[in-house]
Image (tube, rainbow, N blue to C red; front, side, top):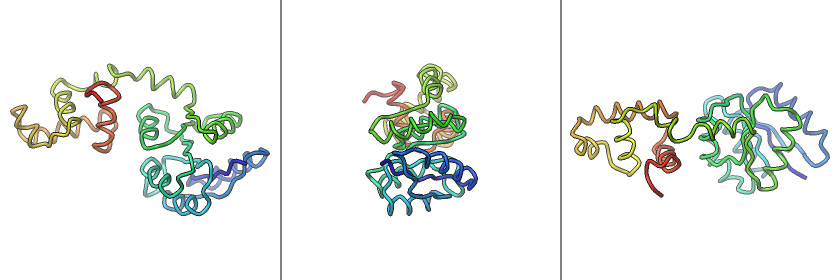
Length: 207
């Protein structure tokens, strides 16, 4: 039996998903949560096989809660069910520790298949979203950056401070701050860890 906790701030949507999943002989809905903090509490107590998680939650984004969810419920695997379909959202969730990603437009069959595959230890990304990740390759991802922004990205990924980057590139620290802000915005990154992961994935730095 695959135990599932549904995390979404829309009660009607949770009820619809619960009703659909309860028709499956091998899936049991163990509980629900409307916020990330509620989800952490529920999953720590219930230890489901699969956490069905929305990303747009009040007060705290679902992607931010993934590491904590997995820390409190280490046997669980996270399957994202979100209306956000941009490659940057998918990449961010997978980098945070999600095992799968499904758009809310997915069919009932796709939802149950994804739950079973994730529960069995596989990684699952809905095919059209997976294709978007492939198309969004290193060249297209980096081409939005200016040459100087790429220089700053490279040094940031290597661990240099803003002051050290300013000295190396003969620019002011304020200019480095500006470049860094533009890089994070253009690449849809939020933390330095995400920046390093992006740089490794796209060949900006080596492993």
